[in-house]
Image 1 (cartoon, rainbow, N blue to C red):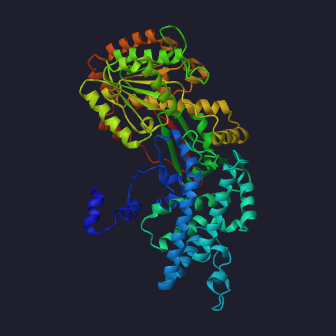
Image 2: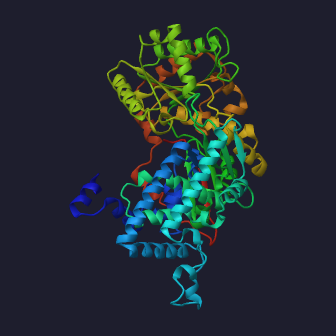
Image 3: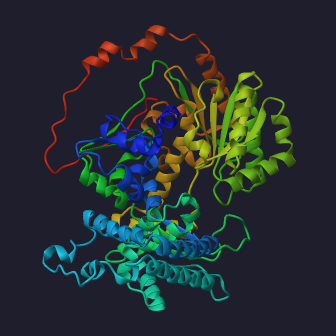
Length: 601
């Protein structure tokens, strides 16, 4: 805000001012996409020196971020917007040709120079002895396909591409359609034969569109997002079509999250997370990947295809047992609780989950956060609890707030939840694993005295994109399907329960409410800083046994803080200064890739 205000006073754009300041800064803090997404990284991070130290903090989902950076989804509505955008571009190009044709000529020359500088095309032919004032520069630069040399040609070219994609969408939505999966090479072959266009121009589509939008001085780029997605789609498709298929084309007649809604989609799904991060390992000397939930830590080098020079999982340094993880496998009636498919809808499971929540909320003061495995399951359980009278009883001890898919509603619910905790009324917040609350919201101090994880948050295993990725991991990296699914579910569960502890003097309960957490293959994948507190007596509990442990823990945590013991786990300023290490020696051509799972908050 200060930079924005200062930029207004000086008449400078704060965005471009920040872009320029990057070259003079010692420390840069920004989103993963500024490093991993090629579309953004080449604009923002391209001038960073190779000696820079790159730190990916909270990197437990870094493989998913890498995949999303190189994946594109197109639907019918987006393609219609792309057609309208092409119409606007065509009208604007025709207008400029009549009034300022020199601008289009300069735009094309800038594009050629930019591609030469990036090494995507060869040096212009007139620089190697073929100069002639008869032949136009377009002819001499024969490396650039003729289809997109001129702005009007490029617009017509993209129109062909969009129309072909619309035809493919119509086919899968028709009576003879259905879910289809193709390799990029197969999809590209059908596109080139169906439209009579060549593969080479497709590789330049994204760069060409970006250049044209800059030349036309488009002020609202958001209106061209759909067309940009199409250009991104075909550029990735044509670039990675050769060799081992590291992408998959998934076409589904119903890609909508709304049941019964017909919304056909074409997804270009990246299957190899190492594609996006590999350029960073080659370019920078030191890359550090750290998070509190990198478990099991040995799977990340396989997923990202690198060899770490240091790999370390650390305990939490604490002066008291401030975390109490509990695994509840059954209700007070001794019937098991689990969200696995065959059990999740049973009345006994829903009733025991409700009774468990009521008992815990009567015992635990202030705020309690509950995570469910999905929005649909949360809605189903809440509906059943309403008919059973669970919510009515729950409201006697705490107010109830719910996370929704609407960001504004969720923000308002969080604000009111905090107010309820502040005034002493107490509250319980229902949220979803993999949702916004599970990743970016801290429930420190009295805002989160306990986190309850209802079930194991596995991904939707019938997803065609997930099935394609699992097959790729099994075939190329020998990562078994169940190993990856367990790894992914447990890191999400760890991220959810980790919301409860945010400082040395904080404390909280981590309650895993599913019988599957009691199995060694599940709980062994929890982070080391949780396992250090997960003793044998906290396993395989019933609801009433868990409540006894909760009361005991709260009595211990209610005692005054031992300041001497607290100071023993903190560093003084003098100790930090003495720890200032000498610079690391870096051998030429090698990268120091460091994995660290840190339990300290």
